[in-house]
Image (cartoon, rainbow, N blue to C red; front, top):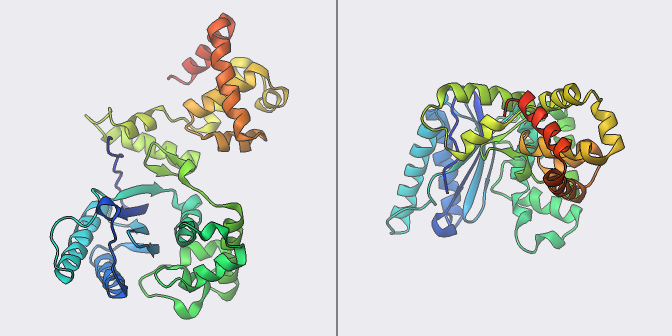
Length: 327
């Protein structure tokens, strides 16, 4: 499988995931976990990293970090080397501890920082058997989970000096009792709704809004030479902002998008198809935009493909829209 595109620049924010080799444990006890956090604290100081959230699981960890110096690779390489060295010495072992390279998803700080922080904090209740618990029980479990930054977000007595709480809690009323309580309530809502972010990742590498992804696409294409065959680069090249797609459809058809959606039929199926293929939107996102369920989007795109084989006028219309978008 091709590696995701590694995007680095000053001020970039990442959701970082790193798993144990062969999915084996990377922490055997709390001594390891404490040592991991001590090494993490020293490393973020050394590389001037801002840490917004973390969680330690048995065989992997998550970080939500900002790199003011644009030095993610250097930070993660050195951090993993130091912790692997510690772990191997303590447990009298040799070889790799982690499974290949870490995974770093670029995050739109202005619009998705809070969402990703909450997703990270919910990890302990995604383990087998936890899904049978109720919301209150899961909140209580998360509140008591020791190896997570969530404690400092909902309880001022558990704040850790190497975590920056201010940006995320700023969306909930600030680093105050009010802000912490609002964040806790939001976590409860996420549990009830089954928060998921995997369907929001574009090009294997980015979680963000249309403007952010368009900005990254233009920035990356100017720098990524000789690597255009990477799936992530191809995905970014194809990506068009939702607004750009809607504008092209309205100009070619002479119809307002709201009318197309309300009336249904082949034009609406074209909108579904273009948003999916060219916009990088998932079926769930398109469904939310149109007020339809996921299965309707999937079936609509399937029916459109069948119609195009038989209807020349429909093929011509679709080609005109694609040409307007220059794809």
